[in-house]
Image (tube, rainbow, N blue to C red; front, side):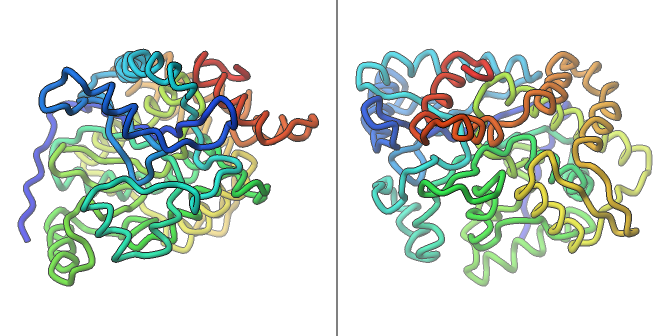
Length: 378
C-alpha cells in the first residue's frame, strides 16, 4: 500500500476539540447537535460548516481550526467559532463544556449520529464503540516528510504521559469518582488500534503496516489508526491524540504550544542526525497508566530503573523547547503550561468542588463557567 505524505515546509498547527452539549435545566448531556449544527451551517456552501463537525453521539460537537501558524491564532480561530455558536445554543438553553467525560450522564441514554460510517463502526466494534461518551483534543503539527513523521512519533512517546496528566479532566464516570485523573484514557483504550503507536523505523514500514491492516479488514483507512500519536499523511502532520477535553481555551493554547514546540525540537534533532530515543513499550504503558491514574502527581519510571516526578519533567520539557517556542512566536502560551501545574488541571478542580460539599451538577456548572469565560474557576 502506497500512501503519499503531503509534507509541510513549516510547523503549522491545527487543533480539533470535542465539546459536550449540556442543558441548563439538567446539566446533563443533551442530544441537540443535529439542530444546532443545522442552524450554524445555514448559509455555508452545501450546508456544511467549515469549522463545526458532528461526532459519534448527538450530544457532541467537534470544533476545528483552519491551518494556523501559532497557538494564539488557533485560540482565536476556535474563539470565533464558539462566539458563532453561543447565541444558537443560548436560544435552546444549552451550553458547551470541555471535559474528557461528562461527570454523570450515561452513554445508554444518548442517541448516535445518523451516519453510515458511524453505523459501520458500531456494528464492527460493538459495545466498546457504543460507550464512547468521551471528548478529546487533537493537535496537528506540520512536518516535512513521512520519515520525519515516524521519527517524531517515536520521540513524542516520551512526552505522552505529561500531556495526559496536564489535560486530565475526567475523574468521574456515571456519577462515581473513579480515582483516576483521566477516565477517558482508559475508556478509549478499549477500542481496537487505540493507545500506543508501534515502534516503526521509517515511512516505508508505516505504509507496509497500514496496507496489511486494510487488506485484513482491520481498518478502512489510516484514519482508523487511533494511536495516541500518529502520522496524518493527507495533512502532512503528526497528530497528538492523547489529551482529554479541556476546560478553557487558554489551557488548550498552552498545550498546543508545548506540542508544536516539541515537534519542532524533535524535527531539528532528526535533521541533525540524532537518533530519537524511545523507551521500551512496557515503560510507555506504565507511565501512561500512572499519568491517567495520578495526573500531575505521578511518578514516572524509566527503562534504566530510575523514577522521576512527572511535574518536574514537565518543567524540564518547557525549558528544553523554549528556543523553538520563541522562534514559533508562542513563548507566552508555552509559559501557560507551568501555570497549569500551579493551579492544577481540571480533574483536581472538579474534585475540589465535591470536596467543598458541592454536587456533580455543581461540577458541571464550574465547567460551563470556565469554558464560557475562558478562566480557571469561571
